[in-house]
Image (cartoon, rainbow, N blue to C red; front, side):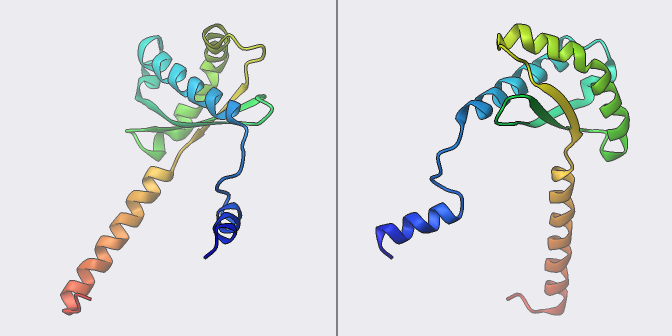
Length: 139
């Protein structure tokens, strides 16, 4: 494959494309600040169960989607989302002071079910592997 062919393939996959790096930097900073805030300053013991998994910030920096998980699992998600929304104003004020930005993004909290999905798929693959071994076809 020629060099131009490699470049076209990479671009078709979304690789090598120049992206706006500022939203990614802001998302990382928000994630660090919120994780620290939840562990150290949160008065709500419910929020100590929350683990921020990722933050996605829009290109215009107006909105930050904050994804979280909990050891309590998906059944606690509605309760934790409500608690996070309740504390959202305080968190946004903290971010405004800590990040010293002209505008602090609005925060939307969403339960991140990706870890549970990975676990479910892993169980399926283990079941398939066990069935293959039981059938005697280890190929």
